[in-house]
Length: 264
Image: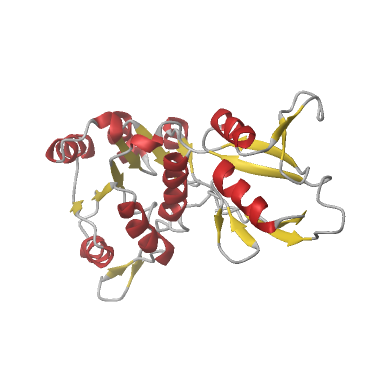
């Protein structure tokens, strides 16, 4: 996941500015002067009631729907900056700062009801460690385990679907509280069954896969996601490619995308 450096804004009224960014662009107040955006962006508000404000600062904000965000800016007390940067749409914050909107995410992902994850190469970096007795182990990312609970709180059901028969898959699934179907040869058929058991349309299913054995199942899902280091064929099929590689926070990034879609 990309790391966004904090942008400092000089503002006349910290509470007014915080309210604007919360209402218009989905930021949340993390500390008294620090706002965190939908995709991990940070904005630091520095009150200067008697001095010049941040009118020359340009802030790029990643949003799920740029058109809706533009309307929200105006409705929340901001404005439109006409012809300030060639043909790039610019908007004005409450202290004259320039706001550029960058669309990101999965259009329509607010309707996702079931997320299905491949295991190796999605929740791991696709490597396996084998000891002298033939026992295998993998490394998983703790932030993904945290994100599973966060996605659950969004009202999205989740499941692991893996070709591997190794008990490490089941052990990790149990640890993070996810149902798991492993040792699967035909992922597409199993995916149809998972959706049917939950009365979820395939158009409302999100599938995260990384290699060619995920292709048929991904093709059935309404939303297709791949890690940054997925096979080229899967990258071409994906609607959204995470900035994170497999095992490096794919599910954590996915939470931010789903949460932003619900807010947007």
